[in-house]
Image 1 (cartoon, rainbow, N blue to C red):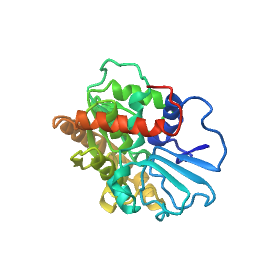
Image 2 (image 1 turned 120 degrees about the horizontal axis):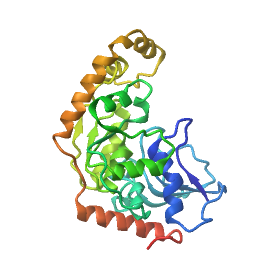
Image 3 (image 1 turned 90 degrees about the vertical axis):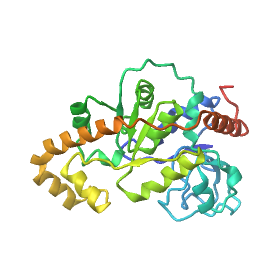
Length: 294
């Protein structure tokens, strides 16, 4: 059985979590490179282009609209649970198979407790890094910066634990903050195709998601905010380079905006709902494999 998740040249926090979380939960040698059975875990990876002949086991994945809708009723899909109600509705699946995002299982990894070290931490969406100045913004505001492209996933989890509050444009920044019971503030992703999956997850936990407008950390960020595009094309990059002299203004302003958000406090899922959903997910996982946790 092959562990299957989104891989790119640049690591991305939620996707990279697959590498460490499942190994911590499942007894060794469960996964191999046999593509006849694919294990789909964390991510918006319910795609329509998996090999037709492969069996697909779905353990908390979601549909993100990045491909056409897969035919989940063609006999090759074994759905343990999906991320949220929007995924189930879009793919014509029973609402009874909705639990939440598989990353909630991080709760059972046995991570060591951490003392609070940071008043506030910030995690951008990985697409926002090339066009922005987020490290500089965080330095200016005295905010701890958590890099979603850092391949050291355990370090990022530790820093979330060490934070009193997490501001995040990355959905899995919020999911892991919630899972590790750290209050979080959501920044609305600039690219609208990312919005639906946030609601898919938040609705699974009955969270009244409060999106906040993301400040611009550069002229290229501002351009992306105005157009709703990724802002990494040739024209956007040329604009950013030509007007880079404006960076100090955007850095100062973005830092001020993030610090204003801190004052409003963060969100977190209800404790009972969180507990119920996490144990539901663990029970489902236990029906497919032997666990290292109880």
